Length: 113
Image (cartoon, rainbow, N blue to C red; front, side, top):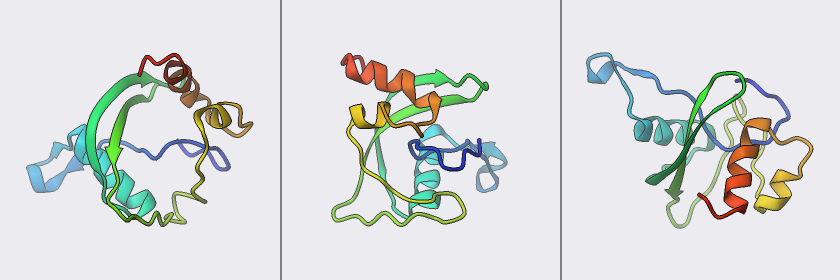
């Protein structure tokens, strides 16, 4: 989904992988690729913590990841306007938060993810 000016977590779709005989990427492979494409850094997936489906029908996988140390996030201007760090409460109350992030932040606040 294209959502200019909205705040959201890095992410994107699972793609067909021609190097793997036209099989789809695994969620882990898509996570690594999307993070690298959007923010220029290679992450290590630690574990999936939740799944959800947006109100517009997009299935999301939510992950904990590890960033290398040190790391530098460099937004790809074709996909990301800027990088910002917010607490969960600040993010939940931000007027530009993409609505599909609210259920995750509610569960996080309750300690359920």
